[in-house]
Image (cartoon, rainbow, N blue to C red; front, top):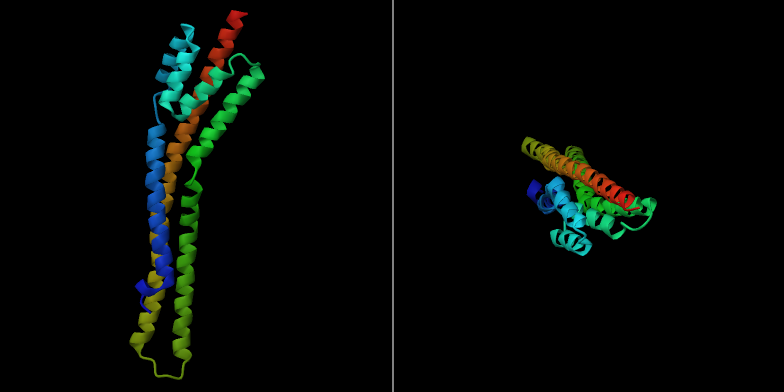
Length: 202
């Protein structure tokens, strides 16, 4: 059986295709989630200072990015206790982070499993080679080399899938970590503003 006809080959091909789809889908989602959070909060704060809480919420809902959703949570709970405010903002932040982190684990799983699947294909190929040698039928050198080569190619395919997938996962993880840091900074900023404004109003 040639490499292209092996089930292991098609499993690796499907994993590679799935990884590419997940990568570009997550990349587009993470790029859409990026905004200048400092400018956004300044704009919302200016509206809140003018006493237009509903307009500030409308701005957050229209923007519809993780930072905006966290800011909206702070505005909605601005009249609650300090603990309730912080918990609401933290919960929204975790929800946004979880949504952004979705499917990244799938890329990591593909990257880790592809070499093992390739190794499994190589072992199966070597078993076939040994069985050829052990058979009573006359075996040519070409048969042995062909079988061994198929085993090595499948192992190489596993690595060829795993390496770029792990690079894609790493690139997305860097973007994700940057967004998480910005989200935490935005949450701290808006909570500080709401707290300070409430203290002034007392």
